[in-house]
Length: 81
Image (tube, rainbow, N blue to C red; front, side):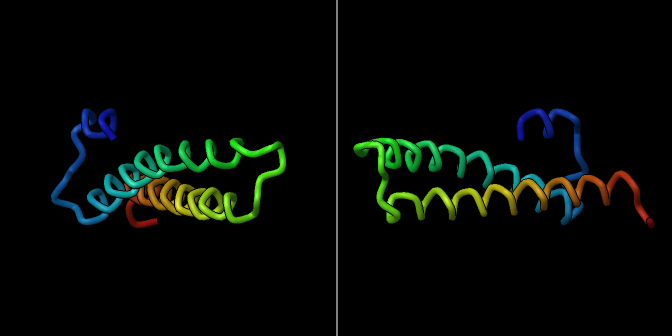
């Protein structure tokens, strides 16, 4: 997010604000996934499925955030088609 902000985006654009928020969510989600990963590996080598659910949810959030940011970036780079 910091490197994107250094590029001087047009923050008056709603899409740019959504993209910046998506990247922020992905970053914060990464911190939470770190904790989820610790819970998964904390067992006897066979994690319980309940420990894996937060990791699966976090993975879905990460994918949604990155695809949102990528598509908005592509759309802004090629306006009108």
